[in-house]
Length: 284
Image 1 (cartoon, one colour):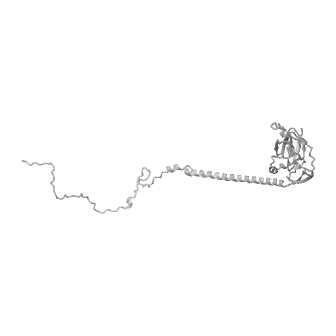
Image 2 (image 1 turned 90 degrees about the horizontal axis):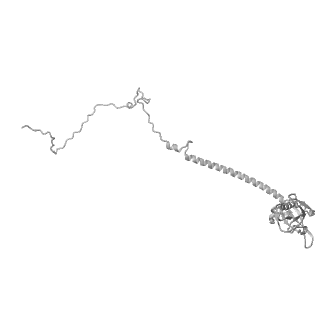
């Protein structure tokens, strides 16, 4: 009988013997090898030109990428400064102009104030020099007890009362009974009476400055429809109160007093106000 062979893999018989591991052998290179030189790593030269125009083996220097300045450019203007710096510069310029303008305005105002003060001082000095210059005016006072006349001296301004009373302030006056003809409106005529006071209630008071001016005021009163319903028939003029200081001290509302009808020479009174007073009656 022929022998039969089984081609199936055989199972290894278990064994307690250690297995042997054979490492892979790597062939070693024997022999000496010359050390490499740094010159061997240098870029070789070539007679061929690269497409970029340089040598085929030319070395290119490494250039780091440029830092992006897009964000910075946005913050800078054409003048080269940032928006914040530009705004601060404008604010400083405006404040500087304001300070300069304020200083200039203050200087001009101060100069004008000084000039005004100098003019006021000059006017005050001129007025004071006129006030201090005095003259003596003699008033006649009737002594009712004895019937005799005594004289007293009063101080007046440098403007002679005689000059503004048509001579009524003179001790030897000759003005009483004379006529004054108005130069305005209807040209009314007035008879003057020195050292007399016109009676009746007051129509109006004003500062006329002169005896003539007081009579002109009476004429003007009668020439206006708003006031001529009550006729001005006489005036009383007090020269002392042409001085505003004296008028203020005497609480006087003026130096000229317009009086209504009826008026007549017999109705005139002797003034008892401590200073002279002169009257004029409008001729009808």
